[in-house]
Amino acid sequence: MRKKTKSVSFSAENTTLIAVGAHVVGDIHFSGNLEVEGQVTGNIVAEEDSGARVRILPEGRVVGDVRVPVIVINGHIEGDIYSSSQVKLADKAVVEGNLHYVLIEIEKGAQMNGNFVHQKASDKSSEEPNKVVVIENVAESGHESPSS
Image (cartoon, rainbow, N blue to C red; front, side, top):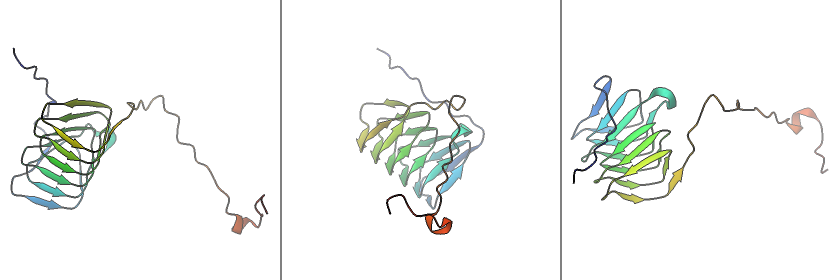
């Protein structure tokens, strides 16, 4: 029986590589693709609507939170993961933290220490604009609170 191999595609353009032996300390903000074979100590952040993708390869390690639309994990992450699109936990994945996802795929052998938190897919066109609530500062207005 042939194994079904539907993988998340990564384009060849605009790809950043953290190679084996490299250790990046600090937050990474990016667009496009990011592949981690080395270690990142810090948060990895991509804009929500950027279509950004991260792959944590088997030798890769991230100590920090990851906020990316699409992420494929086959390495080690110590921190929370926030995905607005798709997450794949490959067979060598080790996650120590909470996983916030819309769509998830888990291969046999993946390890997860934390909570799975399902989120609904966000449809920007149907969302109500954020409402701003103005709270009057009682000390500046000179009005007393109703309970006094």
